[in-house]
Image 1 (tube, rainbow, N blue to C red):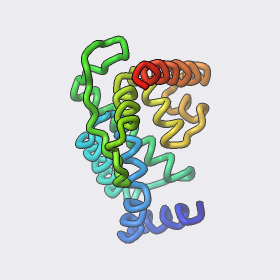
Image 2 (image 1 turned 180 degrees about the vertical axis):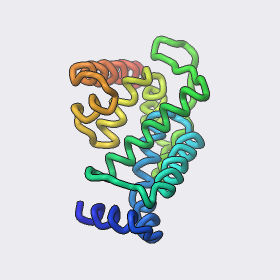
Image 3 (image 1 turned 60 degrees about the vertical axis):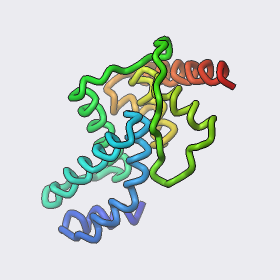
Length: 178
């Protein structure tokens, strides 16, 4: 995008308005992506805050030739992984009988009271992290499977398998409830 290239150039020059515009433009996108990965609104907000604080600190040394959106998504995803590792969170699989409540509230203020939305959020939360991450990156971040493979440092066929098995688990979980 031309706007992103201009924003990157202005940001590197130290323009605070450019940083503010980048934040406004990508905050909700990153919150949605982080929420899909960690399924905790507070943690997702912390992740996005951490990403933008680190980004703001890189003003003078910032060098990016690629997509700003993909760069920020990668930063958010890496921060999600770091937080999950640091908190030693136990990820539930769909085979676990323990019910899990989701506090999913998307940043664009859509109403989540719809029962189907709750079921989807709960089913996503129960997927293994690797499958959830692939689905979130492909559907929410609109990343291609090849990009996800490079990001996760695995083969494209592994990403395809994670995506396919994740969708199958979502379908079976949702078909049992609908």
